[in-house]
Image (tube, rainbow, N blue to C red; front, side, top):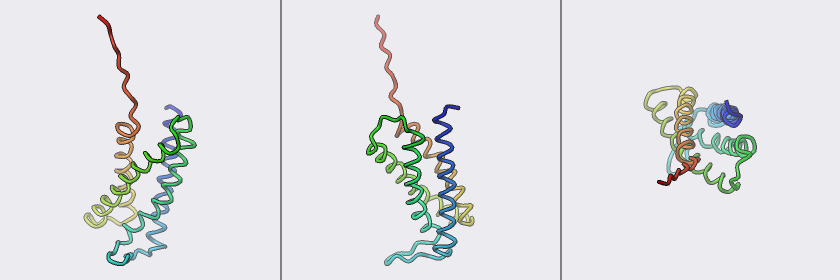
Length: 145
């Protein structure tokens, strides 16, 4: 296994575990499994808990990727951050959608729903990073006759 792949898996696994612990903390302790009233609308506790956990794990994830996983990257910090923001914006939307499906639609408890959601989002995120956001340019081979 290449060192960069190992670093990606180790850092991603650690940050994902950290995110799940944060989610559980916000859901069970901060929001006490209650709905969160935000003026004109209300979020269920399991959906509201996604956002503060994300804000923290987003920062740790970016710095782990920047300084451990892709430390040899020639990309500027701004470019890395903009790609990371776009990818994570997609992922946070997917998190909310899958949580609604698993918890509200299928009746799973929120923490197992978050774990199932995380597994799906990791697969989608990896695919997007590999084939869209960080796709390497294909080399063109020219032959002369």
